[in-house]
Length: 389
Image 1 (cartoon, rainbow, N blue to C red):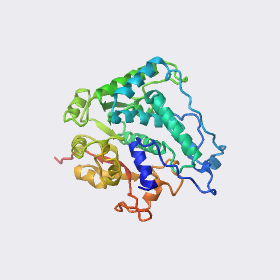
Image 2 (image 1 turned 45 degrees about the vertical axis):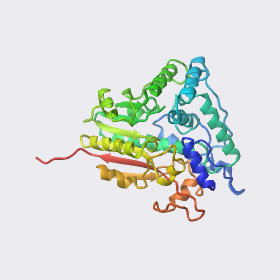
Image 3 (image 1 turned 90 degrees about the vertical axis):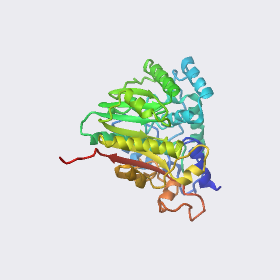
Image 4 (image 1 turned 90 degrees about the horizontal axis):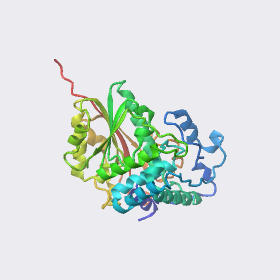
């Protein structure tokens, strides 16, 4: 397995940011081309400020950035929070632990992602691990810096959630986060102020998450006030691999006839083919009742074969699969596309930009024989059945 395949495998097995490659650049490239400075966290609605932060240092006037230090809050180091994370590390399986890894990525990419509670949800262990990987990547002038892919994915979902909610034209709406993990969008996205948010995940995970958020809300964590941004948030203890998860969602207050955004971020490829198709078919069936937007990321077959014990479901053509289930207006993006870049993937020779130049039907890269491992970011819309009377 050569470097590109090894890099992607490490990305997959590390929940999208652990142990990315350290391919060095030639001397004609400056490291500042691949790094941006770390300004204060941006409020969720400051799109223009994000555009400035996305620019290269020579474009926005920022000086060459220096390596940032990892500063842990007093709350994170408190006995209560440390005890909670000790139990997480002892009792949770790899799928559940990936939620903490994802939160660490959002916490350390705070110059791009506004998430005031990400560090508390991640815990000290995963913050330190990722911080060390970022430092190593910086020293090695890596083409893909640890965490960048997770940052791009998060920003893509954030942007498309906001767009989807706008398409409802002020109607009452719901946002369902399937396999929610340590997702804190209900506390960081102002566009959810009129939305009822449902977080669906394992009971133990949701209980621990609620306890950590309660601790953050009751403290002065770095002078950041933690407030609920959504109209409401309801945690639904359910395993989406079970047949009754949708019934549990409805019993928790979900209204099938109300406009809904379904978010499947970093989850569907963990499911078996049978379970994944059942989830997608359930969402598609509900779209017959109301205006529905599905946001999900899909791996192609080559991606899942790099870690067959972890990843199961794949789709090489999700833009064909979803219409067959009843969705319309399917839009597919790859990392590095104009709407899935956010100023973070500058190098044309990085792993994902190299893949974008090849047809999606190509399974093996012609230059080096490596598998073409792809992650697809997909938005699909469903509309209620129209009858003429």
